[in-house]
Length: 188
Image (cartoon, rainbow, N blue to C red):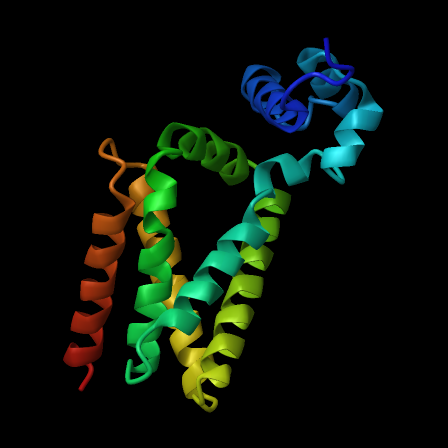
């Protein structure tokens, strides 16, 4: 028998989400999360810096996947088209996590400090995308505008998707990009 239980991070995440739903985010302690997972607080802190990080883990992976897809976009792609490709590349990741995302978003929506943390995560991704566009030779303000527009599309699509029954992030994101294009055309 192995010394360490299998998948402690996943167990901690599941325990945290269960407790956040059962008794509320504010009322849940790290000690309770660890106990529910059958682990120690020390193990919790090996995986997460605090209980907020249970909700925000994966942000770096999402950012890295977007930046990688942005770099792989065709060289002749417009800044917004390259951003579109970056977002489309990660859309499928969300569909398999639809139920968890709904629960997570409900927790975030109920707590202004978590909403602020979510906004900071999105701003960090926008900055990374703008840097990726600059690496492709796009200058400011175009790099920043395209990155920010992409994050606006992502946030709009995510908000619509997380409340939907279908869980089709790719289709939802595509619809939001079409809506953005219509807005740009209407403004000309």
